[in-house]
Image 1 (cartoon, one colour):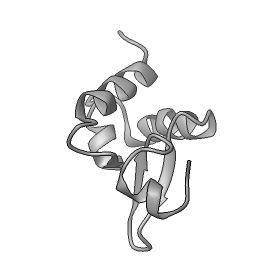
Image 2: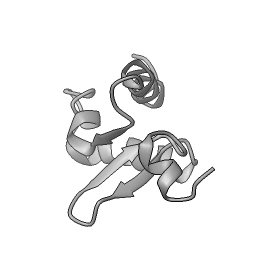
Image 3: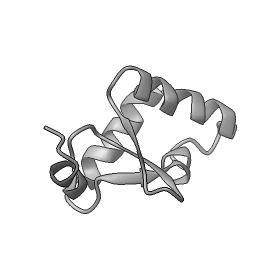
Length: 78
């Protein structure tokens, strides 16, 4: 089986033209054989390594690559 982190990164890169932020359920769906808690650990590990970041609208939390997307420019990120 491929490294779960690589699977997440490949998915995000393949969708980068259409989307820059993803819901947890979008990413967890990449691992149908994993329990949600295990998938959450993989995704949180990517966040702690700085590969992904949290983005919150106030009512929902999404995940994306740091500095990617329309919000990055308006929020003063580089």
